[in-house]
Amino acid sequence: MTFKPLKIGKHTIEKPIIQGGMGVGISWDQLAGNVSKEGGLGVISAVGTGAYKNRMYLKPDEMIGKEQRPLEAENFYSKRALEHIFENARKICGDRPLAANILYAQSDYDRVVADACEAGADMIITGAGLPLTMPDAAKDYPEVALIPIVSTAKALRILCRRWKKTHDRLPDAVIVEGPLSGGHQGFKYEECFLPENQLEAILPPVVEEAKNWGDIPVIAAGGVWDHDDIVRMMELGASGVQMGTRFIGTQECDASDVMKQMIINAKEDDIKLFKSPVGYPARGVKSELHKRIEEGTAPKIACISNCVTPCHRGEEAKIVGYCIADRLTDAYDGIAETGLFFTGANGYRLKEIITVKELMDKLINGEEK
Image (cartoon, rainbow, N blue to C red; front, side, top):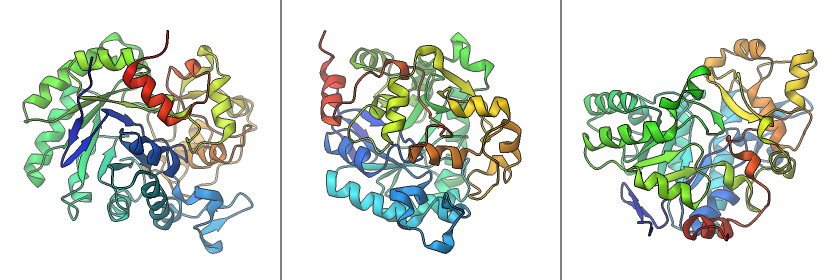
């Protein structure tokens, strides 16, 4: 199959592969810049930008403690750092399209959307909740394409009705994500295992629903691993795919070497769904952190960064046993003992570190048999 370019808003993506937005510090300037350079859509995660390059864009009074935790959401989601991430990515990919991934559940959502638009994002991708107010957050930037993430055709219908009524606007594309993705899911724990919620089942109804609203490209995500998977998604009606975990296994990925090795060394049984302070189940590698949570020896929870609104300033973190901002930052810092290492269900299949260019070639042309 020859893959057609993917048109989103006024932008054309040569190769219909979107790199998933992964925070803290997995998809920043190096990964996103190189994916866009190679003809895909690089996506910069807006999560935890205060941790970028050892907190070099935060001032001393914007951090706290020996771990230098960003103080409050305005520093955890640092505008200065985000600007530098985009600036560095642009040095790599030039004027090719670049996107930002911004969680709907995060604190300061509207402010960070504006920050990303001002920093040079051509598109905003939002999941972790149904982003009904997304157009309002981006109302001053009509040229920026908006791409919500949904898990069902019903969710897309509700979202399109609301956007059309309140802002006379529709999504420029939509990502439909199945429950094999890394990080937070769009289903409850038990629902993630039901056959009717798998990507192959939910993609065609979303494609049909999108047709009711015009020419909205549908992008398939969650468990897409190789060329054959991409072909399969296209045959089911997708215009493109989004892939996250596979890009962790690249030299340019901004993640720590500790994280890359954690996933490379993981076996299939090591990858689990966990409870999260965000309120959705999240998938990652069962690590030393989870052992310490079970033993009651995990790091003390103190809400310093106020990263996500559903956590209610650490109340949910205390229930599940860890602060997601601190533990994802530890993973970025390469601290194996207390880091939280998100990966998709196929993470155990990652066995080597290659370049983004090599990976894109494998995805477009197929693996060597």
